[in-house]
Length: 73
Length: 417
Image (cartoon, rainbow over all chains, first blue to last red; front, side, top):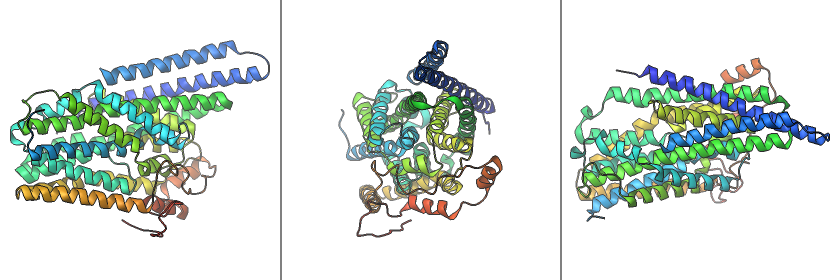
């Protein structure tokens, strides 16, 4: 019986890292946006937070695009 | 379209029927978390999933080709064997849908093929090693991988996102869930619609109306895509309810973490050469997300029933398929008998399901056990290992056949199964 432990291991590792990284990034983006929301409510802006948020979302979008590429290819 | 024998036509129709059950069985995988957290309205969610399944069906024919080319020896297989396999798979799918348990449609199909092959060619037709490496191990690995990833991701998003609140956060988690659910739908379309295409193509080759090694004809791709999309759109609301509410109570953060984990595991596994079942991954991810939140509790009684269903999927489908193949061998009337039996039992299952209707109107607001009280880590751990309280057990019965608000008045408190 030949169980492909290497493949299973890499699925395990990749899934773990990618999921946590993606969710982390996305959460940071959300944190940035809600900081802006609070700043606006107090009459200011939080430019840096917004820029960071969009950078995070861009990275997540790229990951989704790569996912679609994997499905199509 | 070449000239068709009757049996071939029956196989094609049955394969499309399987595709249809596959669609509504697996809607839950993509959309249960999205629906239960309220990110999308139920109808909108299933419509989106259906469209993406249809799109996915057209994206490639790679999976279809692995089934129709080389996996099974085309010369030795008769259309009746494929028919018997499909009968087993369809009945198992319908039965698990009736009791609202998510189970792998692929395992049902594989079980059906194994059972029919054994009945047709003897026990030697089964490769035990393949059974362990392709079926048993993935079924154990998938929920662990997806569950652990979802658990860590949930912890992460709760601790990082403590300062995230207000509309921005709500909108963000909503968008994230929709995106990852969309990915799962698309992946499902490319995978599962193609399985049916592969089966139909295999039957056409076996029946001699297609040359060996052909790609699936366009009408096969189109009809398989439509069948799975239609099934998805009708929505297996019972399974959606179990997955979205029955296993654990999901908040948007958890739904997002679970669905992202599932999408990642599905894509990673299919591209790193260790294929994991969509259903197993999503269920695992949902449970992991349930455990990841402080005070979150997984209802292990429901989970246990689900695991049992997973274990039974292959042998049960195989048994039915073997019986069907055995009857089919009696000649044309045997095949007709099996066809009639399939239609009759499908209808019976549908009738039983009407006693307690679960649809888009009540999929999220069915009676719930009390909200999980905020608990410390120890309490959570204890809740995880101790038997569920009576409330949870009652909820469990509710997923089987307890009367909902819309239950048919003629059949009060039907308790089937």
